[in-house]
Image (cartoon, rainbow, N blue to C red; front, side, top):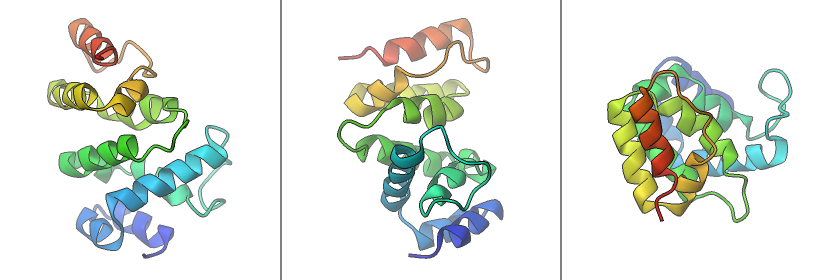
Length: 148
């Protein structure tokens, strides 16, 4: 696997094909969870202080959210690969919240929530209302977390 800095640099260039050639979404998800479980929301200013912080930084690159397929693959991997007992709020009030910004993405989130207990658990931690969604869409987002 390439270094975290090389992976982030490719994402900064918008070259997600290079990112996918260097690292799998499962490897990103695993590094993201290792980082979040070690550091959580008390991360130091800037990046480069933790060997896995690149995975969190990668999510914050605009290119990820502009590539629906990559973003969906990564969100699914983050939900599926969450370690037992992990605080799913990190995923919900972070990447999922960042992603759920329009009708198409909301439909995808609803479908994922219907099939994944971890995804629902993460979704239950989103801060409401999401300003990019209508009142009705926010209600749907809340309901998606309750499917069981």
